[in-house]
Amino acid sequence: MLQNLQAEESYWDAKHEALSRDGLEALQVDRLRETVRRARRAPFYRERLQEISLEDIRSPQDVAHLPFTTKQDLRDAYPYGFLCQPKDRFVRLHVSSGTTGQATAVFYTRKDLDTWADLMARCLYMTGARPGDTFQNLTGYGLFTGGLGFHYGAERLGMLTIPSGAGNSKRQIQLMKDFDTTVIHIIPSYALRLMDVMQELGLDPKRDLSLRIAYLGAEPYSEEVRSRVEAFYGVKVFNSYGLSEMNGPGVAFECRFQNGLHIWEDAYLVEIVDPDTLEPVPEGRLGELVLTTLTREGMPLIRYRTKDLTRILPGDCPCGRPHRRLDRIQGRSDDMFILKGVNIFPIQVEQVLMAIPEVGNNYRIVLDRQNNVDTMTVEVEVTDKIFVEDMRHLQRIRNRITKELKSELLVTPAVSLVEPHSLPKNDGKAVRLIDRRNL
Ligand code: COA
Ligand code: AMP
Ligand code: ZN
Image (tube, rainbow, N blue to C red; front, side):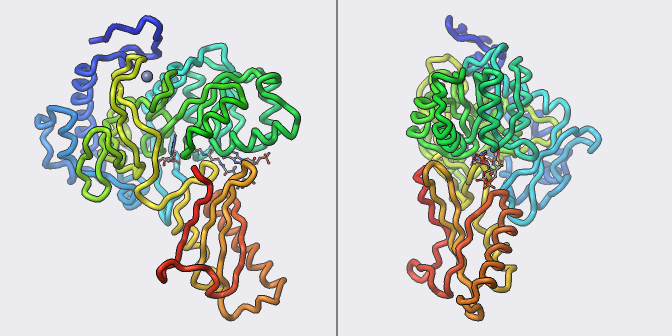
């Protein structure tokens, strides 16, 4: 069922990348049936999928007969409610940032890790990365999936891999010089910040470094940021999309034509729905991305509502892959925002603030990008009982709020204490979030 391979295109996994559209859809049906069969073993899905007959799944569109899964479901079933295999079959878990109250965890069997590494290698190979390249991964390791996700994919492909992690800019630059790094994975906001550090050091990456490819993802960014990063570092930038619930990175990725992100439809079944009615939107229209895993054995997820807003781009890609392309993520259908690659819900800020007795009734989160540094200022009204003249007391309150917010959010905010009733209201309603970053 392989398509005619494009003469100049080479594939990591031709069997799955260069299928015909019909072949791809037939594979999706087989895998969707298998996914439902497996998912039934998980406590969460057992009853929900009881009525579904596998024979009734005859086309990828039949996924619409299955129930949705939400982040709240993952929270409610925490920690093990989605596992469809015994616990001793799992070898890794990741926990997503931006959890309000109850965290959500994703578990991987050895085979799941293997499948994920292969998907990632496919993404990297598609952009032109090859054995012999040196790959430096400047995103957070640990519980963030961008660290180990890219790491295993790069090793699978055969690149020399430097797990440098997030931050520590001078060391990052030294590593790039010492080991002739050619390929990097970096969060867009950090790519901008690192630009400034290089300029301060009088370094011109086009002259002094060997970079040629950069993967930017984990948070929204504009075409303008892509152009600036490409021009300054002398690289080609490829957009990378993923989310922890769907393994992490490797869900959708740009090819060398940089014209939207191929979503790997042999691994994920795609729907775009109206976030209010949950009905499918016409092809090409903006809506919420809903994904069903097709290759995950340990923790399949069915019709997972990502809350990310995007569209399917029309037309075929010149690279010849039949996997459809997503537009850049245009926003969210909930109020989550991402700062320095870390997911944050305003309610997390509220929960921290409201547990502190000196805090009044109103607060405001202001996000900004100043001199290429992303900032978050939390303006907090104090209660009537606080004397604003008592500077030492105010300092103590500010330090406590900063420390507790940092511990909850994983990024360090600036905290500004203001007098009671001084924050502006809009039609009598508090405005909780102002984003001036112009993403
Ligand atoms: N990613 C990585 N490092 C970043 C960054 C980003 N988006 N934004 C800033 N940094 C760097 C800073 O430049 C600084 O290093 P330097 O002083 O040597 O130049 C260092 O990280 C700490 O910066 P600071 O502004 O004090 O950070 P913070 O306390 O507000 O946040 C981070 C700490 C940056 C480590 C945290 O936000 C993080 O881990 N981000 C990465 C998240 C991630 O990997 N997500 C991927 C999900 S798949
Ligand atoms: P996490 O679960 O921590 O990996 O975060 C996943 C979320 O990050 C997604 O649901 C998106 O909102 C966001 N995200 C990931 N990649 C991109 C990207 N390339 N562009 C915009 N947003 C992204
Ligand atoms: Zn393509």
